[in-house]
Length: 423
Image (cartoon, rainbow, N blue to C red; front, top):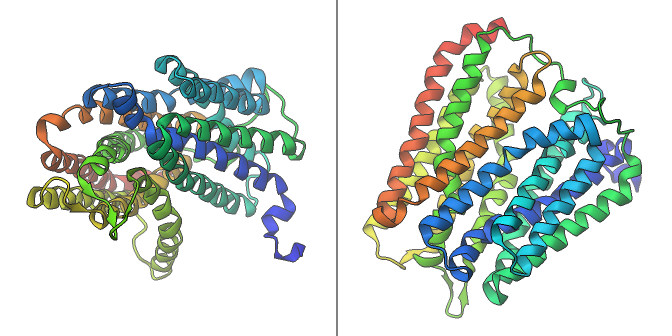
């Protein structure tokens, strides 16, 4: 039966180990992200404005701490200790939320643990391969799909438990998923290469990075700025869009069934799983025909698709009545945003890896994650404006941000040819 097992897993069984670990970690984290605003507003009595700010700050800080966490793992404690220690800290936060502990302290434990865990697991995966190993990219593609699988399951399980039995049961599910990740990782840790603190290499530093001139730095800075702007709108999916789904959407399915509003959060990872192979196939066919492969224009297209999704939802809200927006409209919105996302975020990450100055690949990727942090925080601030504007006007305002991002991408694309060719 071994011939039915992909060659990558036969030669590198640790790939499956790390992917399974990350799937359950992603399940736990996305589960928390799915229910956090509901827990804050419904159980703890926070206003929509304050819950939005807490949500944005939490997600923002969660993507800043990996800069420090990765440095600690590489220099002092090693990747394996960082993965296990980070997971245990996160579990402490989930268990604290389960038992009603101080929400600030629990979220702090989670973001610190995330700082240790997030950068070290992919670095461990990268350490399995030589720089030119063709299995490397296939392994990371599988890893990305494992993340999406965990993110797909989280709203269905954690959200359903929370809606029907109380939000604290969602935290129990998150803690259970993370416990599974820890057990899987510890059981298969012997499959991993030796882990020597102070000598561990980062994923991107192991790849052949570009000998970039100083002209590349403004390009990366421009992309970073555009992605931050884009995320102000994109990160509303788990914030104001989630609240909109709960209060303004007709979620009836037949006479007796009501779709849980947390389930809509599964549409984003589902879209990633469905659309990624189609997009890769389409881009490969376009390249074979000699079509344009300009990353900046590709990201501009994705930004416009995302803007169109927000504009369409806003117009439908303006024409409809509260509570009468039928659920397929929201489902189509989620899938359209996800389709636009796939033109931007994976492409941007690949661009950062390719154009990273020699010897600074890990730092460059850390800054890519910092864009997510900044975008989350700004999205939380912006979400405070929704009660004053109403959902229709607010989502119309959201569309401005991806359009602005598209403008930045086009401007960079027009000026990038010479700098890219120099690289």
